[in-house]
Image (tube, rainbow, N blue to C red; front, side, top):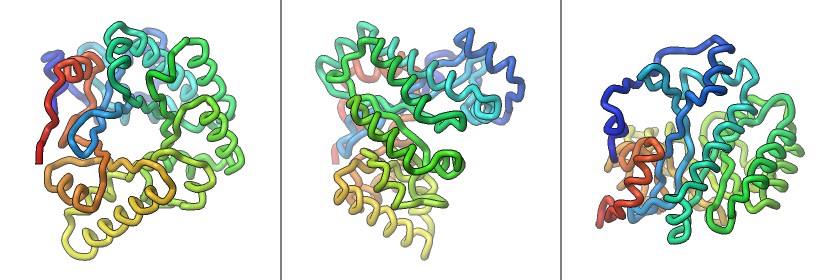
Length: 289
């Protein structure tokens, strides 16, 4: 993949810092200190077919990863505001001349992480859908997807399954797809998977990284991914494997039958302008075999 540090040699990535000041986070939201990054997702031929929308905080020449600011956003109840900021900025990006022209030629899916909020998930989703509706974004040209982590389901006990089913129905009625992220870790519930009618299952990277373990660990994770793949085929949903960090993992996953990949072996999250450069370069696929 491309090294995102190319776009500004002076930026340093900092990850072991935590922001606990709610005023700072609010000020960062108001002053657009966050920056959209996109992580390309590829098919088995190495062609970019999807982009996961991610964020970084850029302050005084330093880049902060989500682990440093997301906990504070959640703790201080800025989740809804933050999701709205991400969506508004994605819409702005998709309305740019570059993407308007690119989307006429090729179909892409853009996946946004949406957090179930304790104050009212259904209302939060309705607010996001209003933003999309008011934006005149052509959803025939671009596929939008809301991505919810499985851990958020489990953590958010205030939401019952009925609420999630209603949310899924509402999202689908607007021609937006729904994916479950980090699936396959502690607390996975197939019941929840079926009840909420997801379009995409994203296999958790911890399961993927165990493929390289010796003995039972490696063997069992291979069987679990294989069975998830079969399940996804039976349910008619896409399966994306995350955390594909090297060629060895990619070859094992391809041998299992996986077809959609995300991870540093292909691309790390990149600033949106670097993704445009990458897409515009019409690079040949990363591998041919």
